[in-house]
Length: 238
Image (cartoon, rainbow, N blue to C red; front, side):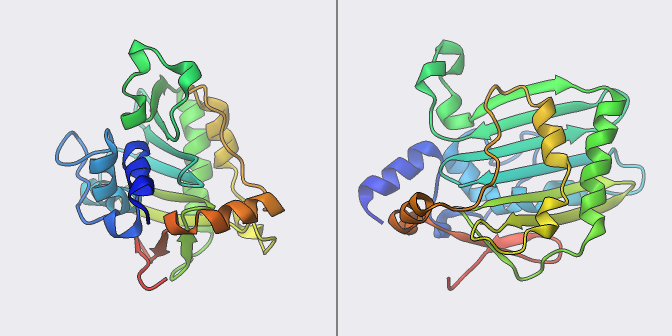
């Protein structure tokens, strides 16, 4: 990778594979977090795996749900954190290229943090998303040993439900393969309807000739993650 591409990646929060992961995400303001691209890279695999949620998940623990959507790493990554309980809350973060049309003093930190938003949910709104997501997580086995490319579309779910840690992942095959497993998901549309970031969700679609050309051009920036039974990690040797 050229020094110029590496610098662009550092500014926008993108990263080469060797820089992703390595530190445990603890949450609660402890240790490296997601509010700058340098810290984000060190904890990303741990964050996707829900390590902090797993550690806090036990009988009587509050229900938590984390849904991360990769829509081409350099274009859009969306993070949704849902808190259950008496006053459900939806935390949202969209990471991607800086939107200069949206720039102001109040948004000056967005190139580092991503676009942040949150909204209270009614119990019915929360339950609709949680039931859809947790239902999907338990409906089909985790695609163990699958590799997900950074320039593809995929969701990773982690959470705590009734004292049990949940994990699963789904990738959209843009090359025209079997997407029946991905197409059963209903929580993406539910989240999009609740989203208050003002940035439309980049829905997956089959690759065009231009998409293929762009992928070939950006192959130096591509990285992969491997899916395990209850977490993700870097895919070595690809």
